[in-house]
Length: 506
Image (cartoon, rainbow, N blue to C red; front, side, top):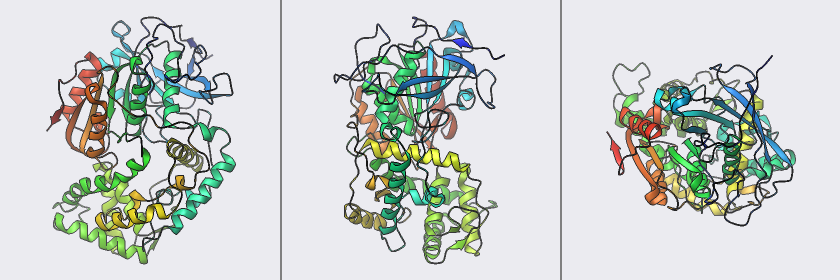
């Protein structure tokens, strides 16, 4: 018989790591949670969590799971409810416990449900002693109440949902895809699809924190999770304890995800030279050129050839490799230097008129779920222009200035045809609140480049200190960073000691 434990009502010892996203309220005495300082309805008293063994196999048998009911619409707390899947591994040293450390996933479309058993176990012992590690599946992500748009198989291809222009720069195909995907999401997404956005994700975190009995939370947010963490820290600044934001998104509230997509221009330019050095190194079994200077023109020539002479790739989606598939593989590979061989092997094979087998893809139900949640979040956060004319000039300029990314970063996504208006304005990140945020950022990051991270640092002002790491790849702390950056972040989480000023880790 499975054992079940019950989270106790709020106690002063149950205080701390619930992460990133909600508004300043001075009322810390109780666990009822105001939505914001805007007269929004207050939340109902927190539900207590019933912890049981997790379904399926997890890497660590200590991980427990529970389901929390939260409002579909936080503005209507007494209305329909949905389920959020939550997980935890308790502090390994209860006498040293400070609180709960929320592991905020990237994406949108990511889940941290198994992260307490995964990346959470990379944390130093002193950090695992101080915190319960908390994971969750954001709203819409299975096994939380899940979302699907029921898309055609072909529309699940990354290079279809990423708006790569046609070889001649035309956007016609992109906007046909946008209309088709938006229609499917409106038809199949139900009410849930209208209530998935970044501010709502932050408010869900506040509900989880309350159900855990925490009056403050600590967090480790990565990639898109840095934006959720920043929003939480803005909406609920006095509910935050120690906040680590790793691989940081530009917080521009006038553009939100449009700015993140546009950042791939700089990100690719920052990172491609590192790939070129690796891909030209003597002794590399996947070497593509004799010198680093040869790699970029070789890549551009091959992409242009594949634009007009694609190669078949049976079993893949799409079942061919054209120029945009090569470019998408480049972006994927530049996320992590461990991915460089994938790009190099595709380049070498395509030059000879063949292609390697497609990498294994997630099961289609997983792709449907991830795609629906990612699309809903991006499109509900901010209204995008709806006319192709709004993008044509920008795309043409981008294609000329940044040929590696061929205009994609400034193109219109599915959101250009999205049928639902945003339910709330994007949250503007400011310096109001306690000085308890540590940003960690690799100098060369294709997805969240340093230029955007500096914008978040500027927005936080006195609230934040930033550690810039001389490293390449997306995700810095305990992943693609270096020992100096890892040491500073671990010290902050374990002791609260933070660098006195912005720091560069060579």
